[in-house]
Length: 202
Image (cartoon, rainbow, N blue to C red; front, side):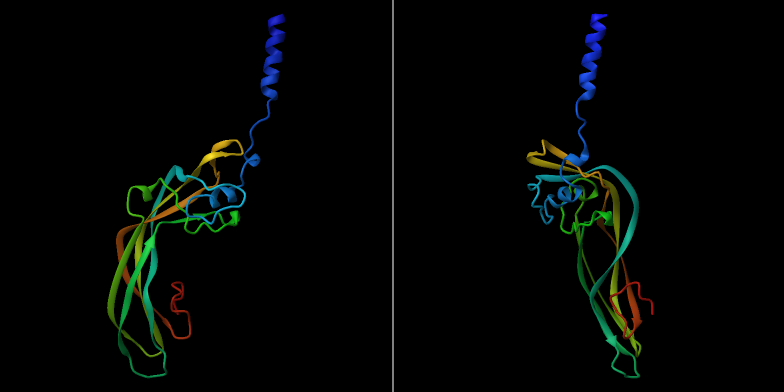
């Protein structure tokens, strides 16, 4: 009976210990902002590294980029003009996070995933002779196939932050890494509209 009472009292003490909660540490915003390449946070020190973990592979996605400046035949003439369009563009690995987090993670550097096993940037260039009709404008575009992966982010600190060296954002991040699979096209639109808006099909 005595041993049972002692064991019960011991278990009661164990289960009475405070449970570590995610909200006791840095906010998700602070964790992301402390990653290398990010803007930094006044609330926590800079992290040594951030790593994509629990990775899920998504279908590849082709993202379109503009090469060079748009060329216009918008001067009121009635004749088509032949011009050279094109240029070059460097595309790097990018990350997206739930918009509800409310932070800009541009420039953030996260290891792991496809970006660790292949180049994180690609430079592509192209020039084309193109006949532009009156009242039209055109720009050269490149469709670059990206590897898409989603995961959580592990944040490692050199010193303890709120009692821990390692924290997890708990918010999924999507990493888009460019490949050398590139398709080229032209994007022609009506004068007076935004020639760089690739959703503009006027």
